[in-house]
View (cartoon, rainbow, N blue to C red):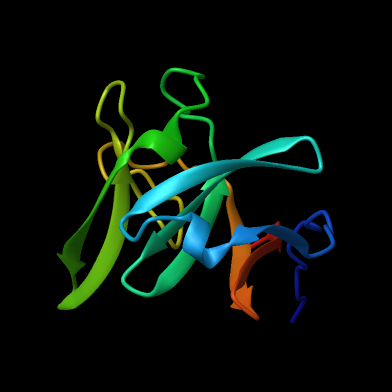
Length: 122
């Protein structure tokens, strides 16, 4: 049996984005992290980070999207809808909820000491 390794993911150091209090619950902000625009959301007491670039339009607008929830397999999950064409993306996986096979890169996110941090691609 041969095991195949996953492609390597670029390692990015954890980067402080802002104070958690700077993000109104249910909304997102855009941060420039190592030259990449990252959309950071504060929703249901959790933080999520994904690329700010809408893959359908190429515009960096996801941080301004409308957040919400949906149910999959009996589990409540969170999403953001792009403000341009309203395509929705799962905040944990970056998966398009409208077009299978389309994804937005997702970054690790955490809170520590009241601050929001993002790290490598999740």
